[in-house]
Length: 393
Image (cartoon, rainbow, N blue to C red; front, side, top):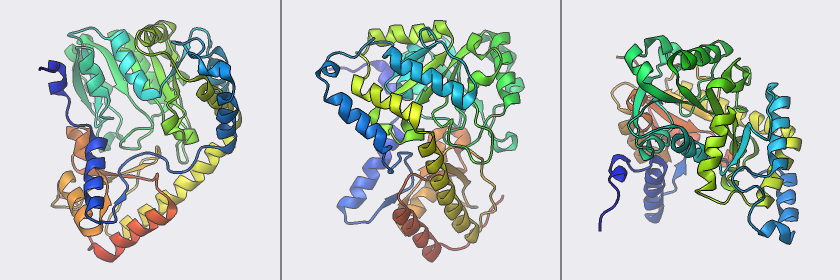
């Protein structure tokens, strides 16, 4: 019995590895607190849950989903209203929006719909670990584009070698960024569109953290003039509405690319359960206040973590997006070594930066998606156990 050769390229998925480590420690009786995984513990809005329950009671919704590969037109219209209201972006729900089973699915179907075997695909490093497997499954090869702290974790597009840029067919980016928390600017988005046009590159702009920003402008890739000519934006209801397990999102932008994603979906899955789409309509149309409430909660958690880190020797001004903190490791540690140290000393789990790419080495990622009592316990253990750390060469 043999499995496909393509699977040999794919490393163990980071979060599965972390879950296994946590579960093994728990079996040994250790009270582990995970600050590693970005999965909100706070519930979705009540009205969204009520909309799901009401729609689930309708037998008509137990059949195959409406407009299977594209998603219900009513849901796509709600997406268009939300983008207009939140980002001043106008979308044609008939041709420029397709419903997704979460934005992660969109990353995969984008590659299958746009990328050809043997292609080169640019991907930021550090970056979300799910991009590379999607590229490999499409038979293409990822090429790392560094994101470094000295440029606020934005890629320097003018430093991408000209021959690499000309050869590339697509580019995966993600802002607000996972893992760094960096945010894009309007100037950068304009530069990105120009870069894509000059090099005939299709952009996959993965934007599920679009609403999670602290004191800076909330942006869509589609705010850039000409963005629809060169790419799509993937988004999700997971982060703004605490709906990670519901698996519902959207791809928006270029009609040609949206249609390609829909074609892949038509031959891969049967769409999203109608009841979940009705709940998504409720979230998009009626839950802006809920999103703002969650931003306040994340902001308070963020400040508590930063206060503890500063008391332990960190002098750190974090980026302004996502519900993560991308934190440099102390002197004398690799990212994996410091994660192990924190686990051994405090039974606190964080994600090692090197798991997000070679340029993630030297950092760790804290997630703010834990309850207040568990976060406070984790921080108390750190304050009571850890020494003052040194930083620098």
